[in-house]
Image (cartoon, rainbow, N blue to C red):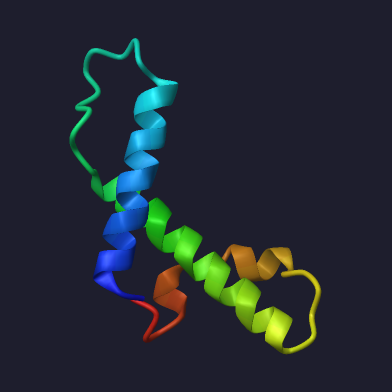
Length: 77
């Protein structure tokens, strides 16, 4: 997983959250938090798993695959 991809997805998540919580005065509109980055890593890892499973002829990921973290997949960070 490439750091600039994580940051791009994290920025998109931060922007999406900004639009869903406009009444929250404590929400820093310009910041990308570590939580945003973790969600971005999860989204990217899920897409990578999905693409890999499609390459193997599988139609769907099992829940056990989605419950794995990026730490469970060396080399995807």
